[in-house]
Amino acid sequence: MPSERRRQRLADILDNVARIRTYTAGMDKGAFLDSALVQDAVERCFERIAEAARKLGDVYDEEFPDAGLKALRHFGSVLRHDYEAVHPELIWGYVERRLDALQAMAEGALAGLPPEG
Image (cartoon, rainbow, N blue to C red; front, side, top):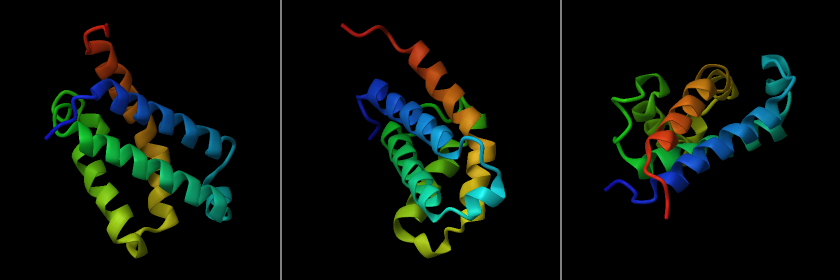
């Protein structure tokens, strides 16, 4: 069942996208692959993003297809349960290809929500 706390889940996505951008600022793939600390931090942020997407359910899947939310929810399951299958190159690929779409989705979805209060 989708979360009734959409605003909070979308804010969680934005917060963790910002954290990933901070952790990886100035890095290229090689620097990322050389830093286990940054890899762990980014992986944890993606776990939180995937969990927020899971709690949102499929409500935004069609509206924001570029965000790849269904695949992201599956990725979260891999991060939690099949962690040995997670390779740093895969995480870096998400950093390079998914952050802009995730940020755009969360910002667009937040803008479409009725005001609080």
